[in-house]
Image (cartoon, rainbow, N blue to C red):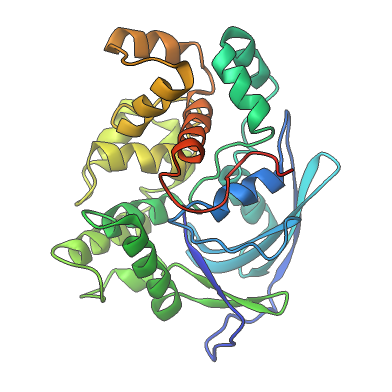
Length: 322
């Protein structure tokens, strides 16, 4: 998901607040921005530090022109409202925010999945209003996959944050400076960066070229047949089965797929369903009952696993705070 780093220090190259505006996103079904913020507080790739439970601040470079933008999002009476700074239209920002927060999916039938599956019903009750929070762009999701290849997640997050601070754009929003992850235009000539070993700079250059060519557009990826989208993503250097699913599900925001190459999903299912094992046919049968929200249920299972095992240190990422 994307990474924006926050600093109170001003930078001389900060994006001017002259451009900007407001927007709103209406949604259907249950949603909690507070739950999304709590999720991000524990999502290592973002390194999000919440300054308020009532609003979400994020910065990214928005395709297809890859102009930097900073956004503040709040929730009011069944809709999400926001203000932004950057040379992007309100409609484009609203579309990005809707995808990032999974508000572009009609969730009115999500409770029906819980009626078919008691385990899902329990997860929905434990994490009310939590929807998948996506990387800010599929481009950034792909870059994260490469940066994190064969190193600890915390190390990868530190490298990604430093890239944002040193190579990204600084944008002043509400008196604070947010740093967006470097745009494809910045990475297309990348020769190296501290913490990027082996072929990672080469792979990042390839991802940048692909993004500039428009082949990491979230709408285009979600429009393709899923197998075709996965195969297209695997053409990128450094992107295999696991990473391709990550980019499609948590970058482009495909709401209805149970990842086949995420081993922790099976661990999460064993915990939630109190089972020692699942064979392939059982996994298909169970996950089919989650349609058309298989990605959403997979996320709830992962959050439950991490909250139960403390696999990653940090605050609970979706459960309501007492």
